[in-house]
Image (cartoon, rainbow, N blue to C red; front, side, top):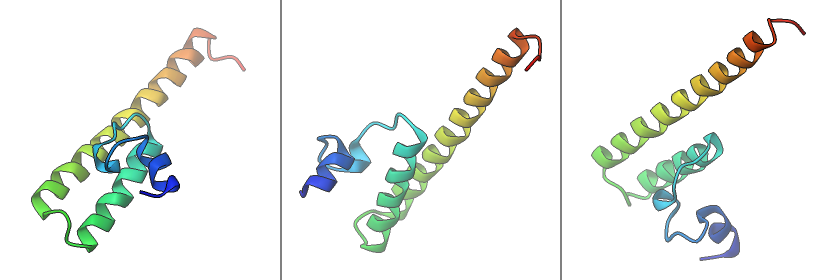
Length: 80
């Protein structure tokens, strides 16, 4: 494993095994999933499930961030 891959996987054997803690992690993992599918290294049902989970994670993270910003604005009384 080269140093760039090691950096991306944070010490895990594969980026697909690394924990997803941010949208950037999800994006990198999705790229790896696509590459694994192109190389026939991953079966479609498993890839489909993983992609669904990544999409759900991304949507929930986006909604959570929006909610946090909205709550902060409301706490200020909506003033700039």
